[in-house]
Image (cartoon, rainbow over all chains, first blue to last red):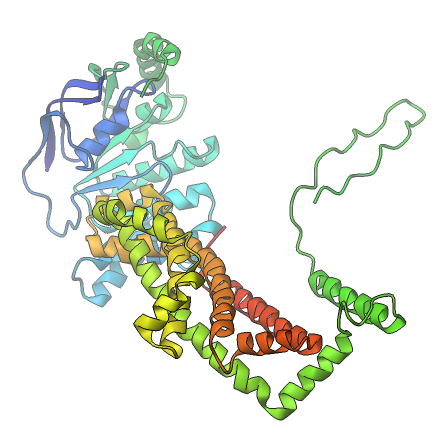
Length: 255
Length: 275
């Protein structure tokens, strides 16, 4: 299933946040969206996921979601959004309970996604007992449980420290290499973008417009931190964004 | 709370000295049994004062006499004759008021129409001293138990509504967005996300509601009941029987401590997930 964004524009009151955004998200690819803060990238992601309505334009699905897909467009949030009163397994089960699945199938899915995210030993732990990285693993496991057609990741690693971020990036690459998934990955971290993105969409500052789309052809599994080709991409992205970011930083927020 | 650290040590021979410690304090530490000790010491002081004559017998009864009255109450069986009707009034009245309050509070929290329509009404009836309405309740619900149930129910209802819709408002919106993004149904979101998320606020509101319930229980019993703690206290008061008056007051205090402990227990059981 591909997603197509058709000329999306949006404003909050008098403030135009997104302007004329057209973009295709091809199946099996990770599309990163980067941009200075306040450029509307999270808003755009919420529109893709149907949590917000654009003023103009539309998000279109092309083709059907794969079989066994319970929730085609699935979010991974920056602040994890785990229910603190449910255990790790309970949090994953939550998103399966509204689907009529036989008990043993549900248990199998939970066991499978916990194994894939290396959480099997923590299935009965409560979120308060987990570190930030583990919490985000639970959120990723929960997203995988519904077998999404497209994962919508809203700065999923931004609340984590640098080491944990590095580990989780490796995990995401391993997950993708085993079973390629489609993802839209919003981030302000260019190092994440060049490690994980097949395509990197650079948005300008408010109102967000697409400034440039950069494609990186190196297979994900071959990308290493410190790779000169990636560094070059990252430097180029930073060049594109630098002035915008500086200007965005000096803007008064009147939202 | 703000226990001050030790002053810095004198400098050593080479002129180096430890950096003075300025952190710590401002953090409640659990101190066991101190509450009970304060009460025991206070009672012991009063006992000593009334025995030596520093405190005249007219101003305060001797604690040991109050205890004796209490024993008489127990032996004669009068204790249960007064306590059981009071407890059942409190239980029925507050169960009605609290359950209606939680239901209305959740409705206000979930539906804008309910909020717009009911919040002003609740604000209007909250400050009414409910005891002033007792004559009205007597006409509506009868002179016996009905009016007392109604008074306690009405009194516990409004604070429960206010704390419940506040608690629903405070449920983390990102969790609700998460539920929606996974396609959970409306009822699932309410049952699995909103209600558990509102439970801490509801339970702490319950502490206030139940204390108000106890106050109204006594007030209702003072105005018209043959049996009950309130009636007992009123009778003792009009005879100037301070020992019996205090025995009644002690029962009320115990009732307050017990309900608070019960809610504390429920919080520890139900809210162990809190950080």
